[in-house]
Image 1: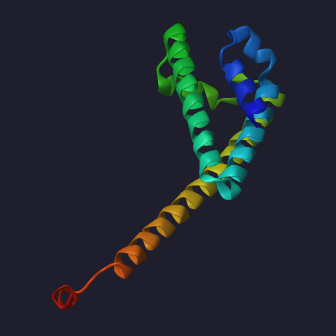
Image 2 (image 1 turned 180 degrees about the vertical axis):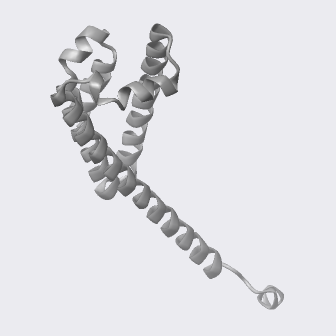
Length: 145
């Protein structure tokens, strides 16, 4: 897992010409990384989940940095870049199919992750409300002691 993370971070640091040659590999590593993240979130300890969150934050920061550099270099806005990225004419057939497959998998994983997060939040709220209810003391009990 950390191997996939390191490969993703290394890829993000490559020059543009090098990135294109390794695009298929990075998508595969990304899918494996997010599959592992999903598994850790479901079955991992609090420490493992926290480590994964830290890695995701680092990855997000690196992606934001690379995105900023690409926008500056190209002179395009975020919307223009999104528009270009959503047009299959800018990719080979193989790249486009791979992008669509990766996008679909990431959307599914994102929905599952959001559902798990909401479920965990709901459970924490329920546990918190149970804790508060069981620890209440009555005013009449204060006077007896």
